[in-house]
Length: 411
Image (tube, rainbow, N blue to C red):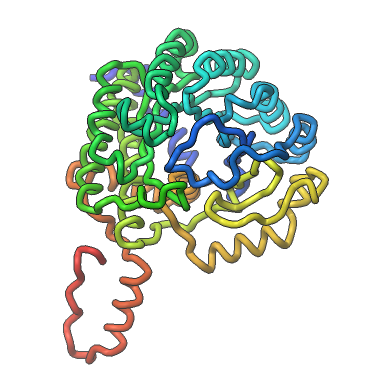
């Protein structure tokens, strides 16, 4: 029997979860490329044409910008390499004070381990309401990772960086999550699972996250991942995610622990099902994309986009760094309408996850279903646009008395 205290705690967890399901569609997430400067040469990078250019927004410009932005929850840093921006803690402080952010995603290539540690500590101290997810980019074991990243010794520097932040991880508890991001590509897909087990067994991380290579990378050949291997890979990844979930929530009472594990593993498996279906057969998402409505991308030079994979909608300097003026512009409204008309979809997990937050179907049906199906890995049931058109054409030409044609697994 559970105690009254445990039952009350579980009920509170469930209430908070249900209360979070229906959200007003307003700005929730900002991806900010804080600099174009980078000290790596990643062959998987979709942003390589923009790297190491002049024109970064100054701290004063960012101050003006944040004062015209509404409050929002989630700030994702990007670049270039964020640790190369010397005033990064000041930038985060501006978003904290002026926009009341609650969650910061801080990715780094780990080449500046002391700076990554010191910046993280300072941001935790200066922003007491902030939870930070410090994520190191690791794309393989030592030789593979260094080859993909174009920097000899990168893997060992990341190991050093992860070890250096362990005291912070112990000191700050749930306010600091330390994880790894791995980009799956042709050169590393056979090594992803051994890499995941290598770090899982060392117990230095709170999570390990996986994305398929996207956009137009420096080395286009890296995008050719065999679909059959990708299915097996995602099946193995589920077990990795379950292990991290068990570790993360082990101190919670049993019912709350089960709910949190279901949401955590179900959500990540939902991401992977979407990525797999989109990558292998062009399937669209089971919910609309809310890019440009609930999320926005700001480039290092002030260019602004609805999504990292779409074109620029203008430059915030042309709006005198008045974000409100841009947000109310006809240009943004037309882009949102175009995304809705196109039923735009991709494998980009940031936009998958943000759009999921605003879909009751995704949260109440797809996430629990993804959790229940986590060990019976298969393609999602929603059809691709091509499959829908083919099915519609067959139904128009089929006689009324004919039975419905069978559907293939790809549909």
